Length: 303
Picture 1 (cartoon, rainbow, N blue to C red):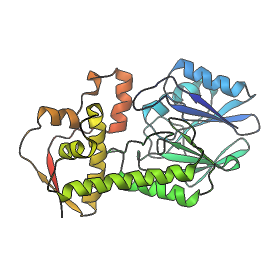
Picture 2: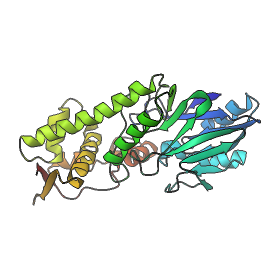
Picture 3: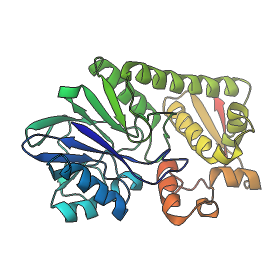
Picture 4: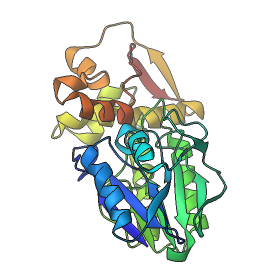
């Protein structure tokens, strides 16, 4: 019933590439979840995957608007005539809003559409009951953990989304993620993700108990010096934790009246195009939220 078609866009952010899914919805109709990047070869692969099973693509749904998931939607829609569905808050071009907290009906099938903020504020997850399958986009990946980065990403909503999945879908048999392999033990994966976020928060709090620290201080102390290429991503993850804790009144921020050092600037406001091409940079900027520049250095302390 579900065919995975992986885009040829591997990278540090997309792992082995973006996973697109062609779902047999009965009555000769197919739904594509996340048409991926705007590669002509990938569009042809999606149309071919449907045709090989005697299906016609009649609907396209986006888990969220990040370019590695959504950029191919207009071309696939033009080729098939299928409307594009997206979250009501999505800035991606789309024809119809997803019926959040209700069912998306395609052919003879109905997929539950779940409002799933956290990785982005326009994220949706889909549940296909006959296969007890969750399509999680970037909320849950097949390997590793996902990026939660302000301004689009938010930690507490993300944790609430994971808790909801654990509570409402304890018998899910598979997770079809936006990147990486299919997950065959959803309950264990969701538990792992919840534990990981709690562990990171405890590390942030433990570091702040030692005294006030900046984001670069926290990144170096928590993650170490071995993977400096990933420090910009780690800095945005730490920022998400700090925003949550500050909103809860558990810490306070003091502005430091000095410019960034060179290392601090590279960590907090990386020049992505210095390292990768424009197309990959667009994905990284969307994932890390680096379109929001951090112009001021703050020191954080527990209250």
